[in-house]
Structure formats: C-alpha cells, structure tokens
Length: 356
Image (cartoon, rainbow, N blue to C red; front, side):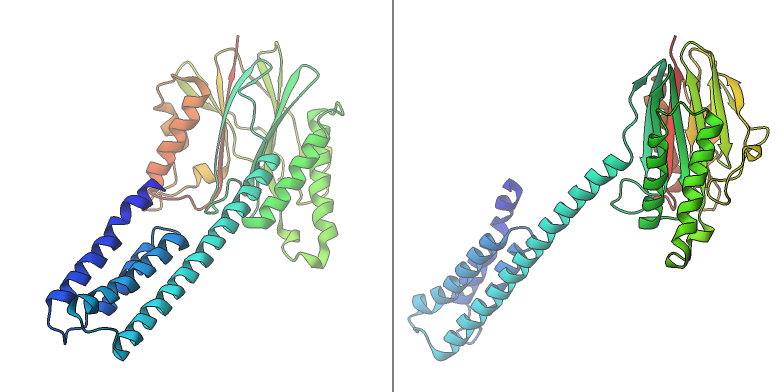
C-alpha cells in the first residue's frame, strides 16, 4: 500500500504538467483530453478508489485552464469533460473487476493449498531413529503437488515410508495420488508385512481404474511406480520393495552407491498383483548413512541440450555437511541450475539419515 501511495506522484505530476502546458500553449492546442492518462496510469498500481480520485482530479484539471484564461465552459469543453468522466468511469470499473478476480483467485489458491497440504502431509523431521528432509517441485505452474507422492507412518517400532510417481499430470494425477495415499495410510495400523502392503496398494489402484471403465479412457493406461521401505528401530538395515521405481542412493563415508533391486516388481495398478511379482530386498543402513529417494522427474530433467540430470555424479560432489536438509536443498538448486528453467515433470526428493 505504501508503494502504491508513493507511485501517486506519477499521475499527479502528469496532471500538473498537462494543465500548465495547456495554459501556456496556444488556445487552439487542446491538451486537456490528455489528462485521462492520469487515471489510466493509476489503475495499473492502485485500487478503484484512488483511480476514481485521479479521474476527479483529471476532470478538475480540465476546468482549471479555461477558468484561468477566462473563456468559461464552452460546449466543446463540456464534451471533453464528459469524455474524461466516462473514460475514467470505465477505468474504475475495469479495476474493480480486476480486484474482484484477484481476490477470488487468492481464495481459490488458499483452498487449493490447504487441500494439497492435507493430501501430501509433510514428513516429520524426526521419526523414530531417522532424520528426514523432503522437497517437492511441481511441474504445474502455481501448484504445490502433482503426480509425485510420499508419506510416512509409524507402527510397531518401525518407520514405513512410500515414495511414488503416478503416470500423467494435472488433476487426474492428483486424484490417483489421493487414492494411493489414502490406501497407504489406511493400511498403516493393520500390521501388514511390506509384501502384503504392496498387495493392498496394487489392488486398490487396479480395481479403482478397472471400475472407472469407459468413464475414464486413460484409466486402462494408468500406473504408479513406487518404492516402499521399512526402517526398524535398533536395526542397521532397511527393507525395500521396488514397484518399477528408480533405485535409492546410499551415501556412506563420502561414497555413493545405487541400491539396485535384484528383482524389481512391476508398477502398481497395471494388473491385479500377486506375491510372486514382488520381492523384499534388505540393505545395510547404519548410523550416519544417508539414503536419498527421488522420482524420475529428477533424473529425467534435461538441460537446454537435452542431457538428463546426472544425479549420482552430482551427489558425489556434495560436501556431506548439514545433514538431510542441506542435501535436498543442494539437489534442488543444482537441478534448477541444470535445467535453466522450470521442470517438465514433477520431482520429489527425500533424504533420510540413520541416527545413532
């Protein structure tokens, strides 16, 4: 508001300059109609009230010249006054409509942000024996979430975590994200094994898309890549099941290792799942180790020449200080520097450190 008030010097100065020029120039020179510039300029940075005030001052400025010259209000001047008043009214009306739309847009964004925060719940910084940090870069402009997802739960002395990527973008991806996360949280306290959790999630997605039928032509082509992990307190191991998701990176003593699954499963939702399609993998994850989870929006982000982001190579250059928070911030900034602009796909990052 203070900045808008400071900018009022511009239209006020224009009114003064135009009135003085109109008085000093030849009577045949009609500069008064230029006063409409004042309310037009004001509408670009101020609300309808200040814009209307400048319209009134513009009309008054149009009268000052003839009064000083002693010519009085001629029929021609009356037409000019009416013209300035009418145009000023239109400018005020347009500014009012613009302000109304901005308020509606702000309200809509506020509701959307609240809904997104409910859908993608922030992961706790501390969970059991883990320290975690997350980052999410949505491809949709103005959005906070899209087709990438993550969530964590606590049950039976363990932290269970999921990271995934729903095929597609936009509202359809958000809908599928909501479905999968709802199923994940719904299974949290049923004491399911990691394998049986995958069965439940796969069935939830498959039967949901199958039930859509002809109402959603793209449902038959939908799927979700996901990685599920169990971190048991007091054990220097992590159990994982890969559902076609990019493998995590393990950072230990300055070295980076890719935890490739020996038998990765198929993405969720393609078919009704069976236990022989998935296998639990166990990896050593000791105190001080850092695990980086990510979606393909990170490793498939191209630079202007089309070269994908070399995540493993860039992680090896990280100085290792600051913990998970510093790591995700480092990747975020380095990724945007690589692409020289916004990402073409959603990207999610989770850094997890095992505490002593």
